[in-house]
Length: 113
Image (tube, rainbow, N blue to C red):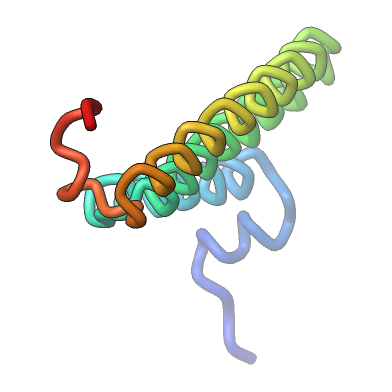
């Protein structure tokens, strides 16, 4: 019988390590997206991915601490702030696209016309 590597076993059993691994991987993917992509839309999606990764880690630690409701309440607050941030961010990206017909960060060196 083939045994799973330890990180896959932790992910499969749903322990704290599994949640931390998923959160860390999502955060790294989001960070790489922000650093390597030139499109404002893709950078924005990377920032949102990093924010959701932090939320997963926060909930994992809340569950690990005995299911304290503080982490869940804080999570709901962060989701509300993220929704507002998404609305403002997407509105800014749409306006930048209307100005220069591109979302490429290199084309928007200044915020003036």
